[in-house]
Image (cartoon, rainbow, N blue to C red):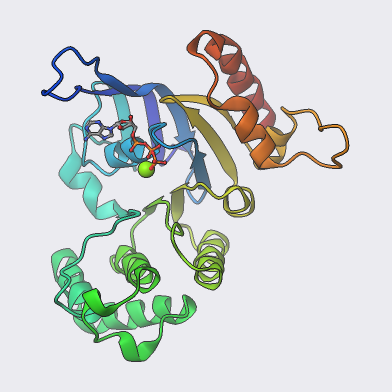
Length: 278
Ligand SMILES: Nc1ncnc2c1ncn2[C@@H]1O[C@H](COP(=O)(O)OP(=O)(O)OP(=O)(O)O)[C@@H](O)[C@H]1O
Ligand SMILES: [Mg+2]
């Protein structure tokens, strides 16, 4: 079966500040290669500044890669951005809204944009928000009066209003209280189990990566240094003395923030572990 997301040799750099002309460009993504299967929940974890959001922006056609190819639903994101967009939705850590408008007015705006009938859009939104524990009576409150967690739940509902095939979630639970976090995670798990939606998720939460994702890639300094099922990733690390199990956090600590010279060995890890997982 054709993968629903495919990246081949993707590179992306950003120019340094014009104030400091000699500053070297930032290499945000370096030789990114991976595929995501339809219906899979694929996780991307890595330190701050490792390139996760840049990759999500490329997959959602908001940025173009400098080199390489990225395909979503069989379409090249550079050559066919307008055709890709109806198939995808993105939830970012800092979702943008019309702050003076209510939650429902914001959702209604998106529904109109996507050509979803308003009655259907409202039913879909209330269904998602019910699952996420969003209080019904706040549905008509201005966005600026809602807490960050509530706004994030509206962002998830908005992303699902057009029934996308691919949901790109950039740190969807960052900044949420523990209950809201669990509600969003449970909903993602339900989507993964009960629908054919493909989910691409970045997170700093190792529990989330391990429990929600079928496979997880670890990115460091723009490079994917390992990719496997969570259980396969954990086999890459030996148990610490005195500890009875290896955690995904141990793997994260071991594989990230290494020097570039060590990357050759990381590539070997990547290749081996991918074979394992498939
Ligand atoms: N528009 C931009 N202009 C210049 N540099 C950028 C831009 N966007 C990202 N970068 C740089 O690219 C690198 C990767 O950033 P990115 O936001 O993708 O990281 P991230 O893994 O999402 O980090 P975080 O976990 O903090 O969200 C960083 O060094 C960042 O400063
Ligand atoms: Mg980010």
